Image (cartoon, rainbow, N blue to C red):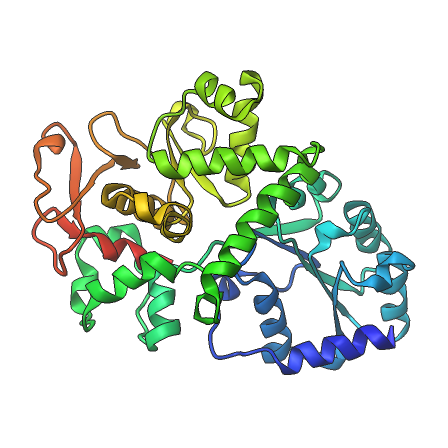
Length: 389
C-alpha cells in the first residue's frame, strides 16, 4: 500500500487546479459511493484529483488506478479494509472497469465498511453501465460530457460567462455579455475545443488513439465480442463519418462491414454509449433513448475534423454542435417540420441566409444561424447554444 500512496502523492502534486469542469459543482460529494461515467478523454481523472487537492485532507484519502499492477495480487475489498484500519475515510478509484470484480466488491465495501466513502470513474461508459445492477440502490452515478463552448472560453481565454438555460438563450440573455471575436473562437472550438486535453501537444494524435482504443478494446470487451469486431466498428464509424447526418439503412451497412443485419442496432448503441456517435430519435414514449432513430451524427464536431476533415460538411458541423451541446440539459428529439425539437420549441439550423419557411407551422420556432453574433427576433446565433452547461 505504501507504493500506492507514493504514486498517488506524486500524481496529486502534478494536478492542475486552475480550471474545474462543469460537473465538479454538480456532484453531491456527501454520497457514500459516487460513480463518474463518460467517454474517454473528457477529464474524469482530473476532476477526482482536483476534488482531493482542493477540498479534502489528502492524508485521509487514497487515490488508485484499478489498472495498477498492485491489483494483480490484491483485492479492492482488502485495500478498503486496510484504509479503515488506518482510520482513513475516502477511496478514489480510477478506471474501475479494468478491475474484474469491481461491481461485486464495491457492493461489499458499501455493506461492510460504512465509514469509508468511495468515488470511482470508468474510462468507458459501457463498462460502468454493465456493472451497476448490484449497486443500483447504493451508487449515485453522474455522466460527464466533453467541454461546452462556455467552458472552452474559460479554459482558453479566461472568459467567465454564467450558465444559461434554454429559456435564457431563446430570451436573448447572452446578448448582455460582450465577447471579443466570438465567431473566430467558436470556429476553433469546433476543431479542438470539446476535449480538455486539446491544449496539450499532439492533440490530434491523442484523439485518434482514443477513437481506436474505444472501438478496438472497450466495446468488444463490454459486449463480449471477438477482438476482430474492432476492425468492423472502425469501418462502420468511418462510413458514418462520411455520411452524417443520415438515416441508417441497417441492411446496407451490415453488408458493407460484413455483419448481421439484426446486430446493427446493438452495434450503433454500443458506439453511441462510448461517445463516438449520437442518434437523434423521435419522441416515441416521451423517454430519452426509446424513440425511433431518425438521424445519426458523430458525437461532437472535433470527431468530424478527426475522421472526415476533407469531407466535412458545414451543415453537419452545425447540427452536430447544436445536438451535442443542448442534449446535456434537455431532451432533444427530431422534428417533423424542422431539424430539432426540445419540448414545445422547434429549431431550424443553418447559415446566415437560413430563412423561416420551415417554421411556418411551428408553435414556437427558432432559426439558429451560424456566422452571426447577435439575435434578431426568433433568429439566434448558433454559438449561444454552447453556453448552457
